[in-house]
Length: 164
Image (tube, rainbow, N blue to C red):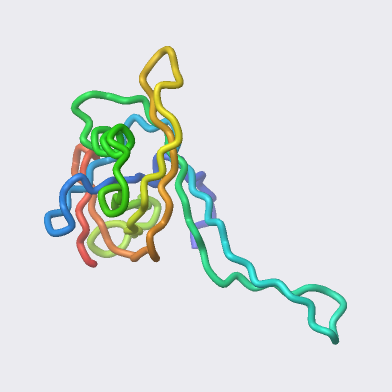
């Protein structure tokens, strides 16, 4: 174990969104986002046993969601996909995206540790800035994540899953 601690920068955990299909994945970096924050939203099971003075709590599940906000840019396929879901008020599978979050602080054989998960896009607002056109909302988990190994292209704009 190293003796020196090193801060983990926000840019060390990079999110990519699949702008391709489920058969032909194309993970593009989620660029120009002003927010991508995660809330785990655990489900708790709490109870008090008759022979104990305090409560006991267990976590029985998670309902992860990622809040997002971005300044819209043209020629950005990630922005185009989320904007289309928002603008066209898409629902069901048409409002589902797949993200790959790559942790550059966790190198493994063949790449980096990453988490792959599907989310429902839940738009909140758009156009609430006078400087740039903005979109915001949340990505709500659709099932559990899958831990995979991923590589990032030399220019940092795309990611590829090595193992699924």
